[in-house]
Length: 241
Image (cartoon, rainbow, N blue to C red):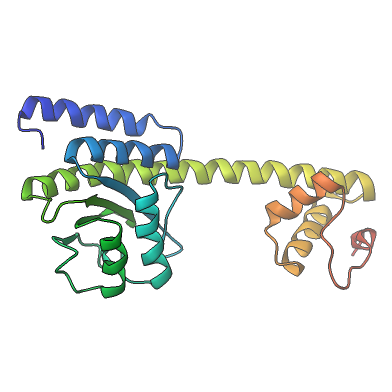
């Protein structure tokens, strides 16, 4: 941990600038991980995100050790990451050779040579957005000062990740509207359909094929055909219905 208050303030100011200057979720996560590795001197670091409620999901992970640690927990549905996500509280494993809370997970992590683990929730006012995972090859590697740094980093990361995800969702929504508009134009021109009928056709195919409206539109644009259904009435029959 940085002991000079002035230098520490400079580092966190730079961190905030770096995080909010990234272009997407994965770039934001990479900036968080790189800062954690430098500031805390840990052997490995990673971020898991929460999706659809509080289920955890690991984004693209370049560190094979972190990937294996996450895989073992996401597959088994148990471990400190899952507990941190569920309870929205930090979880510290001082030594994987003596901690017996998650036997199956501990066996995997110990085989990877990891002895200390610190999971910190990434949370905003809207809830938990993920977990920052910190790992060290030495036992009892994370001090009280390290935990304080991890909490500060997590606060910066929480806002940055939430903002990046929101921006990506907005861009995806804009892209989806554009695709649907183009697909509607194709149907309107080919079958002489009014705008509301063209949209109704796309929506019906989306529902009947259990396919996202955006994907139905993309399929039509790419192939000039609508997705196949088991009992598919002629598209032209939609006109005037």
